[in-house]
Image 1 (spheres, rainbow, N blue to C red):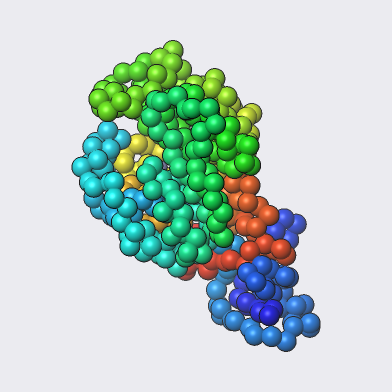
Image 2 (image 1 turned 90 degrees about the horizontal axis):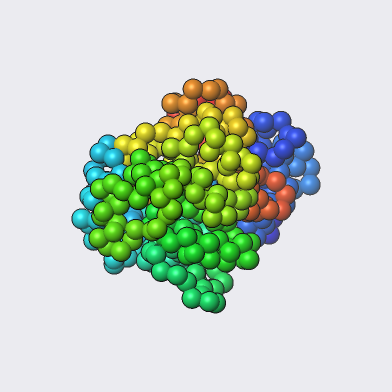
Length: 380
Ligand SMILES: [Zn+2]
């Protein structure tokens, strides 16, 4: 049966529409939007239940483009501000192998409570289990099984569960250029491409990565070598983006996560290859990696979105808090639509889920988020 949601204001993120629609209404049935627009127009042909959200601004359901839910039990269990090597040592001091399912469930419910409707989850060990939890709780998702290690994949190998889910899909992702062998990264990319899936990979996150990719050296390289996870990533003095490009990993399906340490040339390469960038501002600050050149990345026209990364390198998994942090620290002015695009339309385009997510318009999922008061002033 058709139902209606009303709100005082909406930013639908539908192209060609006024940015803010006052006295907004959205008719929906079976989880899909049938019509959306001013209540004054929609009420003429509607006589069903109306859920009035009151004096709030709603936007499309938010998308968290990078999270690791298998680390949900690690709130406050890692060091802050000591750089990546220090952070990873503190991470590895925790129990990581057994999935704490209750912590994952709680994290998903908290994400949903603050408006996140879709996430890209990266799991090293528990991809199928995390996917099942997200599916059960109705979170839209890509559950990515992370490729890590230097093994050469066997012919015909499968890199992620070939299982049907109601609310999402399993996919493959690459951990990084330094911890995953080139053939492995390429094979997973090929599998994702064949299935029409996005290909996330951590890229240009920190100084350690620069050093390993360029020269194969450093304390972190020795740590990786000790556990058999140091990839032979060229050692030709290349920057991470240059090396990824040399492997053919950069195209419109790639989601390059972090991009903290990208040069102007790297940004041009990412733009030319139509790569999507996922920024994780609070995670980078938490670890002490510095911050990505947000302004240059955005001004280049690269399709850019936001992710929280895991709770092991952030204070919470709130996309509103992620956006707030960026807006308070960025040095260019952004319109409400440009800012909200980082957590809605841009993310949906990057992930190729724009037919169902990213805007409040006919045919898409009837999922929305309410703008918290603290964001109203920053956005409008
Ligand atoms: Zn990550």
